[in-house]
Image (cartoon, rainbow, N blue to C red; front, side, top):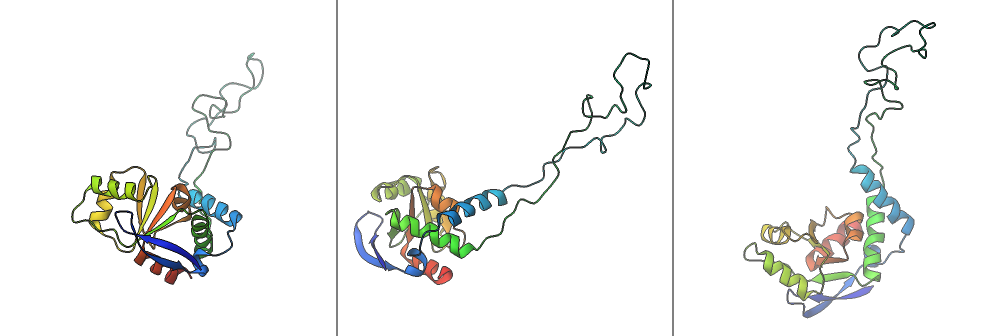
Length: 203
């Protein structure tokens, strides 16, 4: 089991914690992590893009001029793609881009990679008496990190609001973490209680 220091909000070590190998010590499958990122980005696509083909554009029911003798190229409809107002060739239509994957396995690989790189910080707790961006920024400085994904065990309003105005920080609950965010941010800051919840859910 990997042993990680537990820090307080001042950045001082207050203990250690052993991380479960079932979640934080698996063999990192880079292909699986890559596929997970691609699937998440694909799942974020709305898939609502639509343009009309020549069969869907109104008008153009008759030939604009006779076939021969005019000096013009032959034309069958004013709704052909080469005409202004005509249909689109191979027009995009609404489609579902979503890809399904095993959530547990891809998260385990991503979390393990952060542990191996020394980019997972465990804090005893994150509590604020009132929403204060300045105070949260001070905590991030104490932890020696700027761009971080902060994983909370409970939806504490003061903590979430304190981090909301810091563009390089994102808060998430244990049930909303995802591979893309874990890899996007330089450091993953996790509450000690959240570690236990993650191990319980994803083991």
